[in-house]
Amino acid sequence: MFARITGVGSYLPGEPVSNNDLFQRGVETNDEWIVSRTGIKARHLAEAGVTSSDLALEASRRALAAAMIDAAELDLIIVATSTPDFIFPSTACLLQAKLANRGAMAFDVQAVCSGFVYALSIADKFIRSGSHKKALVVGAEVFSRILDWDDRATCVLFGDGAGAVVLEASETPGILAAVAHADGSHSGILSVPGSVSGGKVIGDPFLRMDGQAVFKFAVRVLAEVARECCDNAGVSSSEIDWLIPHQANIRILESTAKKLGLGMDKVIVTVDGHGNTSAASIPLALDAAVRDGRIKAGQKILLEGVGGGFTWGAVLLEF
Ligand code: UT7
Image (cartoon, rainbow, N blue to C red):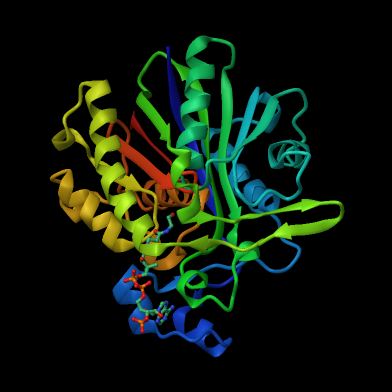
């Protein structure tokens, strides 16, 4: 029994916001710096009041339509997000209500930019155990809400969006291997070190990052975890049709591809138009490449992510 992706969808809020738009809005930056250091040209930012579950709903509707199933048929809903609508209920429960599904198991996964890979890995296990048959796995974020717009070293990097896949039990492959890891001793290099207590924000509610430490860590573990995942499936990296890394920075994508011996023509890149959308970035990139026809049935796709925690993981699948 395999868990197989039968539908993909995504959603980006509003119009693209260019690097120059950020400058016009008062961020002390310039297009040349952002493009040369990150490859980011634009991102989408949700309007006030638009939540992760709103973005997740649009992406999910598109994935369900592509899978040609009704939301009522889902028996598992997992949302990967670090920007949930509320402390509770989970964004997955709020999405479930918006989709008018009742009774499916629904919960959130908090693994920051690795969240979608973690969630896919969990859903794969539920389906392969035989306990669940039709899962919706979503990455949805409104990172713009946790950015310090006075910190130019971070606020230019992130964007909002959502991506979703429907996973169904199938006798044809499917997810071939899924691996995930964490090392909490690196929590300090990327975090939002605040909380809510007694009606007040305690600590710092904005994203803080040691960019260079994150860069070095990401490049190392992305290459390692890609190899581990391929080894587990008995697939060599030369057999991979498409690599879809978490879209954080074009230089991280290029370095990972090089370490794996893959040309950039095998890497799906959306960081230029989306920025870093954390848990949403991988399903957003997957959907873009499915809809424009690059990804075709039967191809081998390697998804991989790394993020705060630190967390990292990879999923190898046959589409
Ligand atoms: O999901 C994981 C998320 N995180 C990442 O993927 C981030 C990984 N790290 C990176 O991508 C890079 O470290 C950054 C793009 C964040 C930063 O690039 P860098 O080459 O490490 O730059 P830096 O932080 O060392 O800053 C270099 C200079 C500084 O100026 P001085 O001190 O040399 O005069 C910064 O003040 O660039 C300046 N700077 C900017 N200038 C224009 C920082 N941010 C900006 C900006 N616009 N937005």
